Image (cartoon, rainbow, N blue to C red; front, side, top):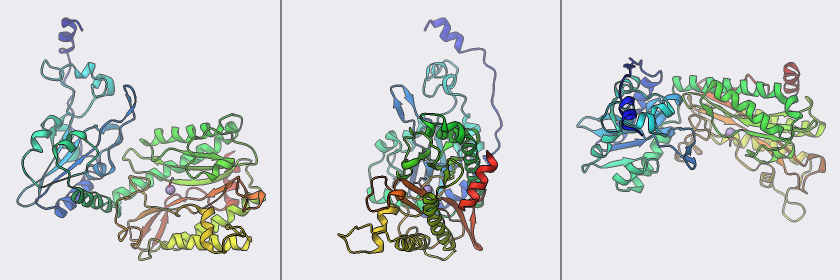
Length: 464
Ligand code: GLY
Ligand code: MN
């Protein structure tokens, strides 16, 4: 780099400072930080956003902050800054809160002065403008400081809890305390169990976009049918909607045609789309605020289910309907799964299926061979949200207004399963919708898609 060019880079730039409004979700994030502060008085709490993850050599995956960091800041997709760290410093009465983050790339002759045009990972000419520290403070309603000051801020003998495993520098500065850290992780997960009104609006938007993605895919089925890897066309069609409306995907799109529908997380998506087969599409748009939808539909590629497909679909539909009827505030969380499973067991029983063949005693639990997994999960910033919640608040807890969850029973008859009649082999069915629990009962957020088999066929015909 000729010295004259370095000097040239340092001059002649206009001031682009802006006055930012608070992020729409920031007032809600402040309440969550207050709850965190009240739970751990007198302790320093450190919540890193996490950093870039290498894809290969010198390219990284698109940045996505840790869900706990998002929940406590309301940061959004397009402006998130890798290696940011939220620090709650104990005071006599509560906590002083600072967001340590990367400021704008400086353009003067001081330290880090070449980053803006030479820094591949963080230089603004490479990845785009960041907020100034003042802009960060305005956007979040928080004190903002440069990440360079983090080490000094974390010095001193203050009892500290950290969300470990997200930021190597932070981890190296804070001695491990496994039990205290697990307690923090659990608290942060449980803090997300009840969604506030702003989160519900984000989830509604994410699910609406997810529904739009299913519509896009249905319109493209015929085109995908002519391609050797039609599942990829389906995946790409949904993913285009995800990037257009939101930040991306809540999880990799599952586009499973034919017998691939029997693989719960079929993400290889390298198969064809054949007339007479089904397409199981399980996908979710992640909004710019990182809340995600998670919906599954099974579409008959020809537009009409065969008799065998319809038989399996109708049973899963009945199971899902029974699960939905069990969604009531005050009900045990497990009730909807039990209700759906009971319908499936009775249905399979009436078909005379013997999953254990002649060697095992006949009992309904063996139908698990065909259902494989649970019938739903909490939904929010993570597709499988609140994963570190204790069993007494989640799996063994009660449904409450503000919970958002999926109901997604399924039946999977593997193509090589000798215990099922031949015409059912290679059929996998799952119907998945997203529900908000209210005092008056469940609200289906994904009601924009048809659920019942005739309605699915009519809807497909209307889109062709
Ligand atoms: N949609 C993927 C899952 O719930 O596992
Ligand atoms: Mn799901």
